Image (cartoon, rainbow, N blue to C red; front, side, top):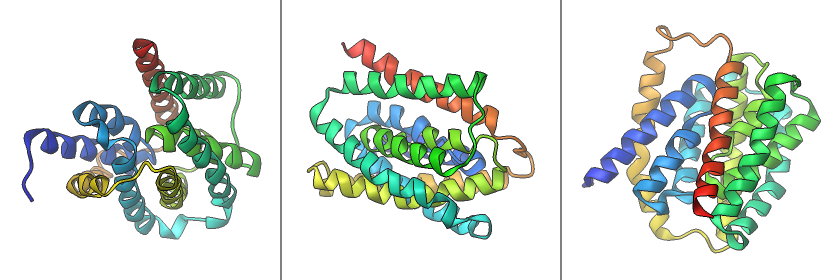
Length: 241
């Protein structure tokens, strides 16, 4: 399989995102989607979701002992209508307006969580997180922050495992909705396949760094990543208007 220079850069970008997500549970889509879009708009959202599914498989296998499927079922169920709405928005809205809407929603949730609200992993918060993760993730490929906000006070190991379980099913839901909306093509599969070495490299680096970089509290990382995830589509949307 031959690679061009931009494709090799795309693999390294994926590896960086996978490395961060393997440590704290989110970060792959946020880091990879904006850069991959600049390299080739066709990478977003379908190929990045396909690669995200592969990453979720790896992380579920790694964290299967701490994964509680029962807790994430409300989020998985809510991802279905969220992904459906996201697929409709891809069809109906301009990228500028979509970025502004989704970014503003995520920014508000992040700032409230940072200053005043301690979100708990209740059925209600899981349902809301799953819905907005489906909405944002299907439209932009960045679906981690809404669910991660729900897990910000959680044990890091359990949070990573349960987020991986959610993404394992959630990415399939999003891909199915995009397919039904006519947004999925055979060329997307080829693009995703060429990105898979990045998953292997990022996962390996994450595994090797566990002793050198212990993650005891995930809340500061999640809030910082969520804030960045909110500001990016807002900035892009304003520039495109």
